[in-house]
Amino acid sequence: MGQRWANLENLLKMNKEWVQEKLNVDADFFNHLKDIQRPEYLWIGCSDSRVPANEIVGLEPGEMFVHRNIANVVIQSDLNCLSVIQYAVEVLKIKHIIVTGHYGCGGVKVAMEHKRMGMIDNWLRSIKDVYCAHEEEVNAIPDEEGRFRRMCELNVKAQVRNVCHTSVVQDAWLRKQELCIHGWIFDVGDGILHDLGVSVHDRNQVHPIYQSE
Ligand code: CO
Image (tube, rainbow, N blue to C red):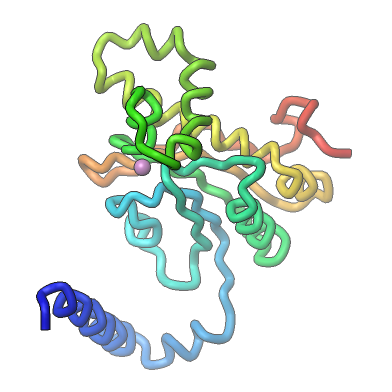
């Protein structure tokens, strides 16, 4: 058996250990889990392996609905992300959508450069738009690392706005459903999550042109 397969076997073995750990704490853990999921949060984060959603906020299975893609981008024509938002808001009736970016995001870095990476360039294109919208501010930052960090933050803020502009979120607010959208950023260097202070909980906080009637 090659080393590659041995590694996969190890994952299955670790899964069994995880199951046992859960059962040691609560013998009915999986009986409860299989019946219902009642998460209060939707997490929209980066696919980056260093930002495991549940783990960094200490939530258990069943407690958070999660969508992850490269650079935590919310694009109005992305059926995948829009479906997740719709199901989370209309069926699960989650109360908070948290867009979480992270410093050192490879997707944001690629978007700030000119090198061709392949199909992913199309996915990351909208981050270049974020840069253009804040070019003066970003360019005024003297060091490259500082510019990179600021772009990671600005990308989160832009994606929070994009979530707010979706018909699903607009319609939820119109029917007075309790729903708040937040923008956070994770520092891979120290494990701390920071609230960027851009929470939106009311349709009137959004530009009128995006509001539904
Ligand atoms: Co990333």
